[in-house]
Length: 115
Length: 112
Image 1: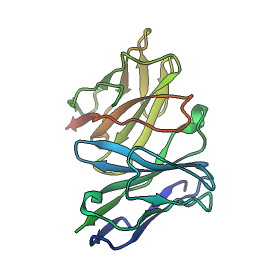
Image 2 (image 1 turned 60 degrees about the vertical axis):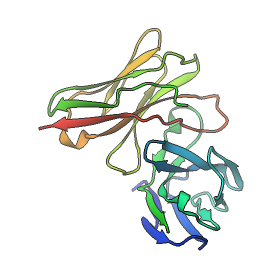
Image 3 (image 1 turned 135 degrees about the vertical axis):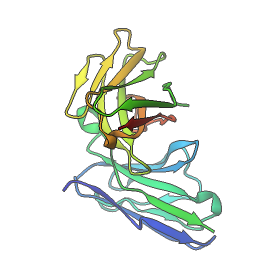
């Protein structure tokens, strides 16, 4: 089954404790992206990757890191989480950036609480 | 800022057609109209997209006005499982970053 998976789905942590949220897709998609969703603010893009070893900042990259060493994986790293990073996080992937193949597929979400 | 305007909420009776409007009066010639939906904090789900012609797939129909300043998403026979927030988004295929600008969407409630 074609899908985007995220782990963990729920996470409670404390300020300053490094964490990684994994994202994996099995569709051989080139493009992957991370969003966060907060009440009243909609989905905002954190980072995106157009292919292996190619990443770039989205609208709200502060406090986050990403890497794209393999095509299928795009982990989101919080080196020193803070309470303002409490949010619902979504990973998404897309086959390409052109034409009808550019629709994005989203993971199930990771709900993060930073105390 | 989102380039679209949608009503914050709508109701529809189960089994009837749900018609969700979207205003995108500043849309440019190379911008597509996309519709996604999000069911109760799950990951958003793609529904349909189009440029200027009407589109139909197994989920919905998309009607775009001739001047492209507005569109309507039609769910032909709404079910309770169609209760969700529906997002109308415009995006240029010329963007170097595949970024969707998400607005607040329309919360559609299907009533039995």
